[in-house]
Image 1 (cartoon, one colour):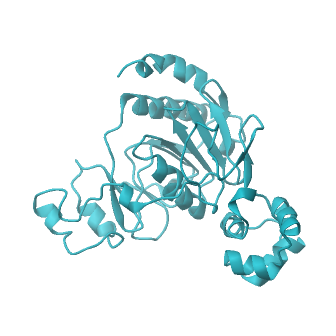
Image 2 (cartoon, rainbow, N blue to C red):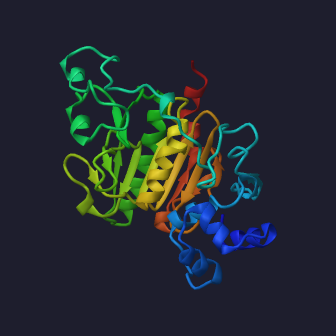
Length: 307
């Protein structure tokens, strides 16, 4: 939702700046500066907070073909990407920790490594606990909760690989310094010692952020390949994390729906939605890099026909 759209809704609903401040939690002075035009370019996290002041049925976004969808509906089409949507950001799905298998509660696995976690609750784990987990377990840590990551499918792996090599080829041809880091790669977005993410593909243009063990700081671009077990997490918790950390661009590739949801977090809070028949511009490269999904899909289409 843009500031102009919020101004329009403010008038339609008869909200005062005081009411918007109370409903959103944004300080009154900040609200007044934004709605009076003094603040020309509010922070994305501030916009996210302001949206909470408006009923969810008033939040509308467009797909890549100009079709309008209410945020209380579903991304892409009425059948696509079903799930409840939070009004904190267009397209953000609500998240429930209990929906996932959690490691480290002393019950999921046997062995000394898991005994060390007993006595801790969800939300209490830190990077020290994360680093103590053996490499054979694929997990990620979000807000002190350790999430199990299922073994990816061949479709998942091929999509990540094909996207990665096209990004890397563009960077090499243009003699760029950005680096493409495919999974497995650990990403610590900030100084928070309770979160370590495992994106499918990362593009990082600041090489000082790339350490031997992990990426420290927000990458420029993150790509997640959605699966039934990660869909809500990728569209909810992780989207929120990437927005807050100021990741510049976030793609969610959905093999089941053959769609790609693209957030250009630098310039537009509304997602663009593409199909697997489209060419996708990479916004961190000003659209000069184009990922041809029709080419990728034609190469791996046979996998979609297998069980």
